Image 1 (cartoon, rainbow, N blue to C red):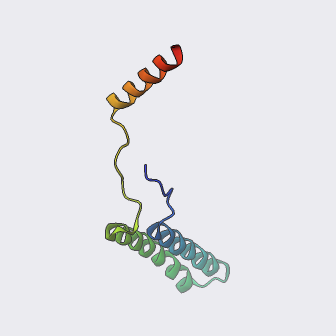
Image 2: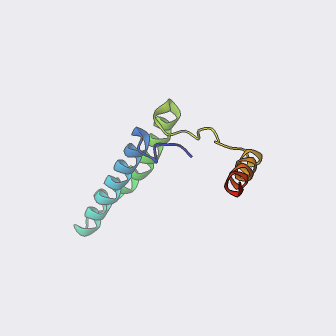
Length: 86
């Protein structure tokens, strides 16, 4: 897991555009305007694609390197257990 907890330009862009899409779609429903509603519906995938593109360009968190293999984690637990026993 990466250190940024989703605080990346790609994540913020995705969340902002998808939230805007839901707001526009909701306003379209409230004022009975089908074109405004469908603009909101069309904006949601745009936000998702924009986030994916930004992530691929290096503005996302990335998968990162795994800190420990299962064997390394088991060895670390064994050392901690041995240290606390002595």
